[in-house]
Image (cartoon, rainbow, N blue to C red):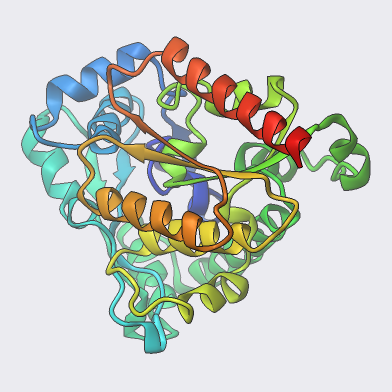
Length: 333
């Protein structure tokens, strides 16, 4: 049995149930890096190249936290996870593609890296082929891989279903892991005064340290939060048809489509875009969403950029001002 280390950032918030189930069904132990902290961020800033964005720096810190605790670090080379059909070529940020190489060059004390190339637009059997390669490299039989693969896909579908029930990833993960009942939606929604969409890359949205507690601040203000990960691909792809062209990047497209979807829902009173400072794709996404928010009913829109220097006080001040504006706007109507 091997220990497989998985950094608690980047694709963790979207695909962790798939890979955790897969490795555990093969008989291996999954080791997670700790939740993001100042120590992890400081280590990442130290190890990563200077011009890296905050998510990449953070990934270096999480990988370093797994040194000495795991036999392998699972760092897939994410290229594409779907064929985008008529909407054009879609891939991940170039830094995702080169992340395994960046880790190897930055740190000498890391365990062996599993850097399987994930390019699912190659065909519907590509994920199965990748799973076979990983299982074989870990010494598992074909029958063991088949069983683990099927159970992992089932667990991922369950997770996606919970997200589409307007549940945040950390809550959905807790329900899956502890096998607890799903809370009733009607009852949980009674505690909120406003409904706001918060869109952004999942590794920013759901990491409470790096976003300075953004979601907790909104919760305290009695704001019901909706994110793009609560929307099915089918619904989001409808928004792609309303644009002359999609971007090249998978996560960027999800942010755009999700925001446009929420701009059509009358109960959503405002849209917040959480962005990473110095992120090239995000600079274009942010400007596009600002334009579309005005074009589609002049929906209130707020952009918040975060980096390693972002503090809670600044984020809290802007959120409280935005929420007060939404309440004042409602009263005037």
